[in-house]
Length: 282
Image (tube, rainbow, N blue to C red; front, side, top):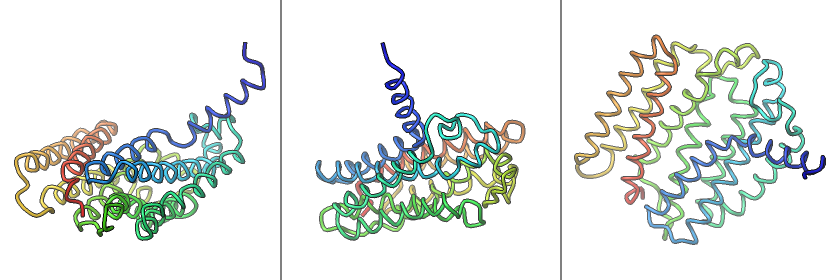
């Protein structure tokens, strides 16, 4: 039988796990770890890359939920552990700062330039949480944060080479698309609490129309940017992205979820292209 103290402890741990935004944390960490393997990092360096990305993403997720707790309570948003009272805001801030501190040496373990680049992305994400999400520049931290992730992998390779232009550009575009897609379902609730980032100023309709643009552009950069022919897979992926974007725009007029689903599908194509091109990121 579980006593009351143990039950409360388990509830707090569960709340902390949910407050870190586990879906994006796992997805981004797994993607960067896979890219590190494909790019040719050693086993030890791959583990360091994964640990650095994981700690950085955890710090960002916990910071986001802790800072937004008051706003989430004001709009009655359910499913947020801090707003629901599953875990105290002080606990979430504590683990956010702890993860951030752990991220610093793990990042620099891949080299001075790699560490500086990765921590720039983490700092941009914290700046978004604490200030920039409510300004017209809300897209910028996402662009920076996503651009530096493949750059972090590249700079962790032997010789610490700078990444190819196309991988950084595609990462930034994917970040902008991720921002638009992440905010789209919450625009109305955010506006009620005074948040006026870039998507909020565009409104649900404008954001829905803009959402596929950076994602399809990322597809074009990934397919056509590297030297040589894009090959059958690159051409097919680019065509798929275009068709999905058009379908999402048309269907999204009646069902907003359709536009979001199409954007997720285009992003998946982009990720597949990124991994397929992974050996040439430097």
